[in-house]
Length: 503
Image (cartoon, rainbow, N blue to C red; front, side, top):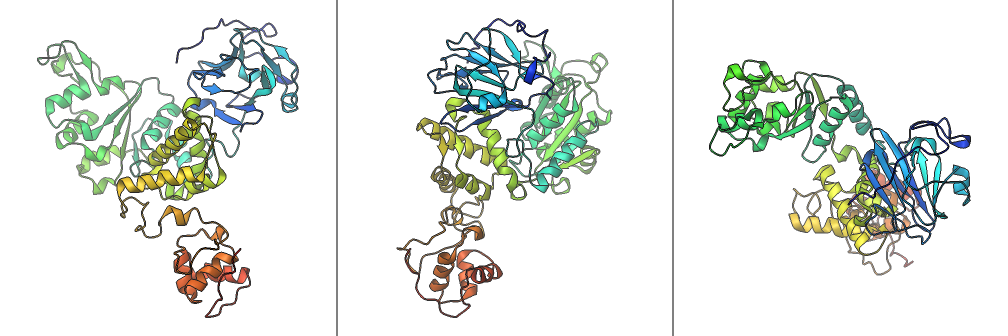
């Protein structure tokens, strides 16, 4: 998307960037998010950390934040980042943009100081901005709400965040251990960004490194012009690209044998840093970088030689938890993924509560990567259909498609033969009232205990002739849980329960 140009000059009422506007706009903490409000639409939370450097607002299909009100211009305004500062620019809209107080914006007031087209107003000096009319306005936030994209509610998630924060400033190596798809690359980037390293973040997939010594040296240390037949120019390798920054070795457990010895020699200083085709005495100074490595299996279980494994784990060790122990974080992750999507690709859709509950309870054998793919896929499909809400049917259809693609076996986590993770139709879409046409022989497996009401319990007991143990197994809950539910609903613990009354 091309940026819409606009001249940038200081607003008439300010002395320069970062100065506070008078009245209700002064003395605020830095802005971390913007919430977009439009009458008749769900509000949209945009954490600034998730946004690109320029975000277009308007009715145009090319807008990143697309509004519907006819009082908003097709190309109305822009959020723009200059360094660490985010600003709002009116782009010559027909009905204007107005600085206003938060209380006035919430009350629907249309008054306020009108911005001059092209003026860049720092977000941290305003509370709210009305766009063309009281029907659309932006709210600036100094803190993210508990349900925002960065919310970390689970104990495992909080401990993970604490480990990242503690390891980020260290210059010692960091070893990340976590299952495939849990977000090890994301964690490595967070360590780099939070550590304040001046150089680049360079990722190397160890599974793709060549086992040939010359090709390996060329990839990691670079090569001189003429080092081999097609080397028509000099190229720097990954190690030098990461100078003053971070070198991230992903899938380090898959390092080829030749690469293991080469890497160990270089890291311990016994090897040389000469690019391919350069004499050792002409080699450039050794690069300095922080080393981060990641593996999906414990080092002792890998094929790495022991001396290299000890070298990789010679600093901070961070365990990257899976979604099975981070279910409370799933709504926050979903919000993050949606906020990162352009408006046309589902960035404006919201997830219905029951759909969110299904996402939070699904097994996710593919971890965060699979969750993100599901969210993006259903959001884009919802937007293409002209809808704004992702329904439980949308999520169920996606999970069923994944199950069909992988096959219903124990490796997918989605099929009917996966132990406690049975069919999503029965786990997550359990209606609190048993339909009248349900026969006594229907399977009622995997019901969430919170969805159980008296009718559900009576149906399971009737289907098993009043046998509590068998009924609990059919419901997919513990026998003790079923007995508690029976007591809660004042159902007798008899051998026989009469037929279910239709409701």
